[in-house]
Length: 247
Image (cartoon, rainbow, N blue to C red; front, top):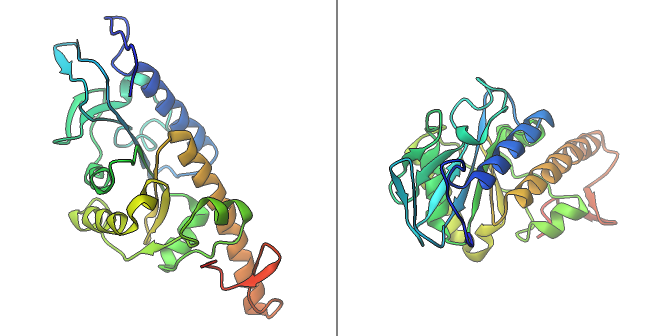
């Protein structure tokens, strides 16, 4: 909730939060956490008072999304300004403010938010090392200390393939998050051949999940090579042999 949020003509609706999303998108692109083909970030925000800006009224207690525009990587290499972060009515998916067009993957984001009211961030990325496991259609072995502690399900699940931007993908994500219950608010899925989908309560926590899972993806890949060569019999994690799922 936003407290004591004062709007003037010189200040955009949700300006600080939109600046933060733009900065995160740029930094994570520069750190090669996605590719020029894209990815998208949304943050749910609920103002605690009603205000108007540019003939648009934003209502207290109503949920809005702040979201990166389509082609954020292709057209701008993620060098976005606050004005390019879109403001969307979560209830109907309608764009209310911001420069640029709405991504076709908005349906997947809305499906995630509808699955669990405590989800505040949906972060989709084409992270390259995680994409290795996603393209295989396999769950990623969960081996590092930080990922095994921070991902309570004990595995990094790969969802069955559904075409990008399709209703089928949005429905699948929604249904799988519903199955997780309370754990859905801090989770990462591999999207078969399409990257990763992180649901979180905080944007910067989502970036931590993304980077640590990318490290885990590379380590798991190397251990899988060692297994194939016969140098180890099972994956190794926290001083013990494991099947890689830690569950």
